[in-house]
Image (cartoon, rainbow, N blue to C red):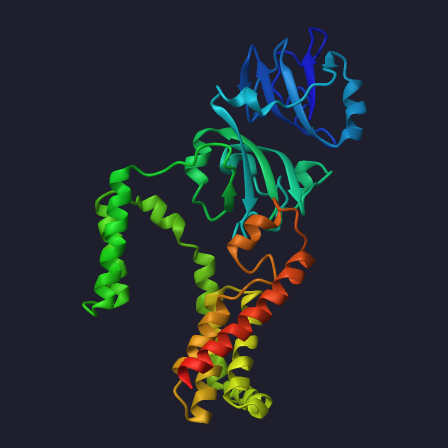
Length: 373
């Protein structure tokens, strides 16, 4: 972070940030203005520059020399961004992690209109535990990237449960619902489970009743309900069901089933169960667990039909395997949450995840075979 003070010699006094030529600097980005103790962040293009303003830039260190040549801008030596200065301000620092379902993925910061979309400014971006030394506007965002932001204090409440970000810094108190709403939520979920377990209504109806109760009691808002639904994931799942139908109707399911049976025939049903577990766990490490289960399900049915056995233990095998996503950082939300902040690399997940996959496979197959056969 570079801090410069505006002196009376600066030609841009009385002009906006854009007019003063401070908007599109090579390798530097003006993210904050401090004026008479007041913090102005994000520093908007139409903000007027005044004498005495302290301008906070972030970006490449080598571009500081270019900025030093600007008459009227004095670099404040040894100036640092003290996060404590925001304790009494409406502007707060936040740390967020890009989720694997975020619309920001694949776009650079400039193209994403991050400032306008979230009313926040990015100070720094870390990937694999290291800061990306590049102009922030040119950085292409990826899942797992950790962003240090400056935004209004309402940012936490607004985006804490957003599908765009998996984690918001815990340096600020996490917003919570009133105790009354928490009690209503617990009672409602308990009612939903009870109605389903006692076979009073199907699970879809029970879930619908629960949602209506939460909405009517204002425990859940329509906006929160809408944001909780990730339509891209639903499309992936729907597409997986379509592919699954194609696998079944084309005879591909029978083809896979035949070779799973042949491959595991030397070990009996244990070999077949293991084969189903391994195939499902490979899928689930690269796509959602729902989609993985949808793809493997017709193969499981084909296997059980050919063997003429009870399908339940094989479906249970598939369900457990679909939740066993340990070997990649992109396989599950919690993996991505620790990917950036923990300074892990892809190979770290392979090192720890593959042994874990092996362990879960052995334990699951053993227990399923013991209880069902």
